[in-house]
Image (tube, rainbow, N blue to C red):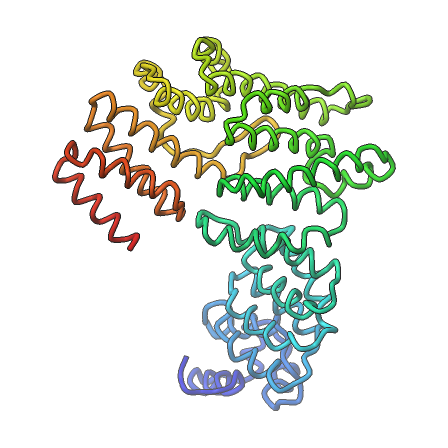
Length: 448
């Protein structure tokens, strides 16, 4: 954009350069000539739809004048929501997040805009325009941080959900900030908020946090289910049926026991999320949830038994996953870990399921498995497979998997995974080729 400082200056310059009249441009752009005249004289502010037509008529890219529009219409004025709202929506459609950020910064000191910004943010969130919604939620959260409103808590929840990604250190920061607000959410959102926090802390291996949050989720979900009138209303606003949160709380508590190597206690939780006798007249959706947890209970029974040293269950475990593709990945994680711990030979199993060593999204019959948890498990799997091959004197494949695990751990900033892979590589450095050593050095340099 040249040194011309206003949209009107640009437009006048365009008309002169093209030797056009207002009437001829009106026919070209579809903008009323009277409106064009009022805009040029400064008597009438231009709306975003007219601005887009003006831009198109001048043959310029969509959103070309948006930066100038913010300065002319919103800076040093009392902005009108009838103009701000459509402009923000249009910016979201074009992906001009920087224009949204610049606009909402001008509104942060005025609490009267918070409800309108929140309503628009919720609309964009429902449409999947998450990055566009993010600065709106941030503005609401900042504007109402002293108000302790439900709108503030829900904005923090949205920022937490939108911000989650592969960076585990960032995820930890997001979870720590949102955890303070989860109890302020409306009850249905509390169930989802606790569930999401459990997934993040599990991916970070913060089992103390998982245990506390799972206990909270269990109590709140049971209360919701027992009060039928409340639960019917709740289930229209939660991501899943209320019984899911009860069973998932038990599953998470069992996972805590598993990672503390308290396998007998873990088996007791398996019985709890396998049991559904307390569910009255289950709907089709509830039956689907029940069946999934029954399946997980069976798989985790084999897993817990195997990791407690009862390696004789391995054939049954393999038979279990043979007809359940979604269960292969978690089973492999356990089988390889057990093989390293109990000196089992699983070469044929690794060959059979080699394709599962490539990262893929994990799903179940009732939804997607947390991306953060899946990524953490993949780091573990790659490191364990590398260790297995190295201890069985297959150094080439072993080093290959260790380096893959280290690369993924660095990508998601998984400190435990990095340390595990670095320790194993240094222990078996003498087995690595010169090419592998160079790759390792480059990866470590990136960490530093």
